Image (tube, rainbow, N blue to C red):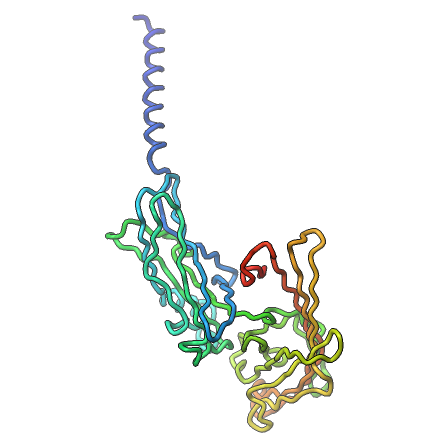
Length: 343
């Protein structure tokens, strides 16, 4: 046999080996099958979860689980889920240091429940973890104090006896669910047209004003320039009730009050000389006819005293002007509470 034939025979043999190798490799798993929680964190390291506020009822939320890999899952995979307090403690320390008054609070079992295991069936690569929220507490008698921020920290549990492996990456294995109750009026309002005036006639504004749920028809904000990261914020809550009392064809009255309005020991809250009111307008998008825009405009007028910034002094302020918010609804989604397009 001459060298040329030997060379050709060698090439044929090598091709056969490669084909066999490739075939076997194709049948095997290209990437390790790992279980992950689908909960993409925001810039704060948490995942916002918006739930309709129902103080006397239960609200459901489904958290997706994903089984990754290049081949189909061939067995029933029972995934174990647990609360992860350590990760929440680490988050608070990293973000806020020793300022524990603005820490994220753990959402306790009184306000939530979920199964300890979720099954991903053979032939499937995903499943849902059903979480039930009871934000009013048991029997609706102990609603959450929404001047605090709440986290439900979850993790996938690993064990050699389990027939799966959790994704080792932090934001795939764990989920820090920032539970945010909402009603028809809560959200982030633009507030550059709302002026905060001190006793020396100095005027200030803030770019936006976050509002929080109190009940179905009421929100609260923080007075003046305060927001959720102020240590003394709980002393400066301003409640805003959206009434059905008409002023004219467009405007309806707002009712404002504070739960700390004592003139000596509290924030001395009082109404301004002008009636506070709101308007709501709806309009469908021109280019996306399924998208409905809802425009909220609030005019507010009130006074309060700041008795924390300068110890021993009571500094009076007047707040007057408009707050505005746009809420977009995707009407193609059947569930109305899921239609809202959050930022």
